[in-house]
Image (cartoon, rainbow, N blue to C red; front, side, top):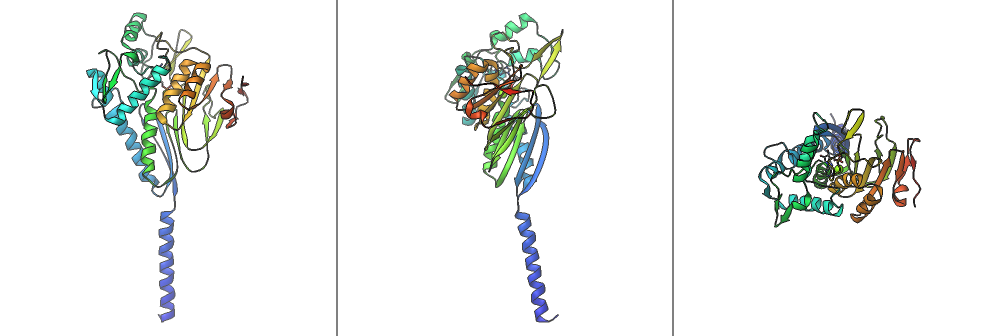
Length: 334
Ligand code: AMP
Ligand code: MG
């Protein structure tokens, strides 16, 4: 090989190696799905190491559930709190409880994070049935967010039979933890769903759909938004039928029975995952007028869908919606 050929081979090798390195540094797009927190989860990541990011997102959700939020995992914070009636909490967990207590109060008790014993009687996750009225009354007597005392990172339930339940807010807590993790990584874009709660993370606009409450395969409405959290609570998510009547899992804390107010789904948009999740449940219980007031109090947007296929929201949010299913229509703003 003469000198000229040797130089050109060396240059080609260097260029080729540079190309391989350049290619390895380009963001790639990966997706995964898994089951955790009693619900279906899915994640998409566009980054330089999407496989690692997806594995870490799943591990993070599983750890959060197992160590903190689960009511059944014997080492979790919530399991032990329910067992002992009190607990000393890490500051970030204390913040979550304080926010849930605040939402319970601001919603006038329509949202109640101590309703676990009532939900247990309905058993929507496993073998649901209409509970015995007397048993329901006993469970209701042990519920009540007002009995919970929070101070100096300590929580006391005030009733040893009260049962704390993150069913309405844990998916949002997971989204907040995932966002904190993504912030430490070089992520271009990511979309993570934990049940009906979705984190839209990264640059540019996102489009997210509201599921068909009647179970159809496509979304009925799409929402255009920047990076945020979007949670939907629906009466079609967990339900059963008995004696020709349908019972769903969002409960009126005054009666212990499923809420029947003409709503089929409520979607809340907030930068905070825990707010979007907890408020979607709270606004479902409160109904359109009081729900809109509550969402506004927390700087969140809310979209209500009724059993008459009407979509209620404020005019600013309306401008971000496209109705996909023409059986549904936007209600006029007053
Ligand atoms: P979500 O799907 O986020 O609306 O949460 C529904 C879950 O929240 C139920 O399965 C119960 O575990 C719990 N839940 C039901 N009713 C209430 C309520 N009024 N306040 C707080 N949590 C509730
Ligand atoms: Mg919720």
